[in-house]
Image (cartoon, rainbow, N blue to C red; front, side):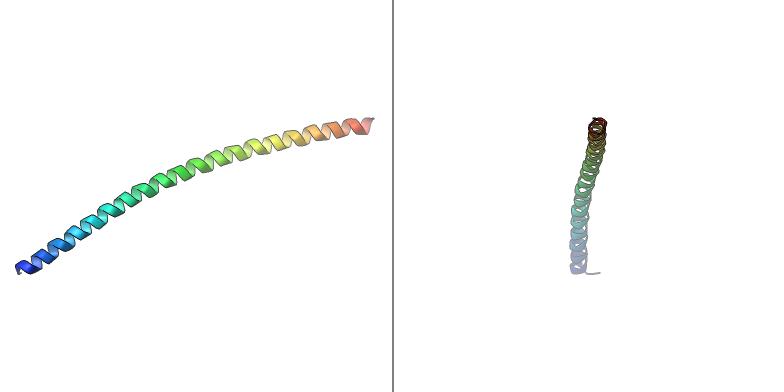
Length: 72
């Protein structure tokens, strides 16, 4: 092989290594974003459950008050 071909091969290898490193950084960034999204989902699910419980409590309280009106 000629020196020119080896130089071209070396350049392509360097480019491939740089591309792999950039992709690895991107993968790590996406993993972090994914983890953050999962934390947000869990937080929203917890909040949703709390709001559902609060809504049920209000419904029960209103039914109780309406029941008192019916008794009057």
